[in-house]
Image (tube, rainbow, N blue to C red; front, side, top):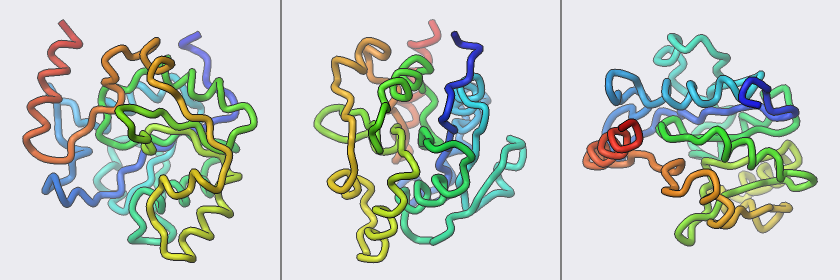
Length: 204
């Protein structure tokens, strides 16, 4: 199963470049000598025939040898990355992940893709929050995203009230990722040490 690409879905890594809370480009922060974005890619490469990076700093990721696209409308945050990604991917749907999620779980990603059916979005829920940057979006979202942009609404979760969403419950996620590590990322420098601790625990 692991050798088979997920059909009809592309992989999209959002690496916009703005890390205002962290203070530098967190995608290139290393754990055990491997940049976070490279760890993300290691999980995604066996899953998707097509993978793209959405970034406004393509030179920094040239070493990954992947197609890269700048935000078509700048300054919108993650919603802008999703908007751009849906326009450039060859498939009708994409699984969008942040560039600083080194604990992605391939079986959870496959599950997200498998339950999409006729939904426009499949998004995990954890601790009362939507994991909007570990979710599947289809091109049917594009008209609604463009309406939000027109109205100056740039929060990704605002999209969900206008499209058909399949929410993944914690019990579903727990089957594949009991510790919910898939959603771990870094927003502040102090969180890197916690991530390194998790990585050490996961690999021992």
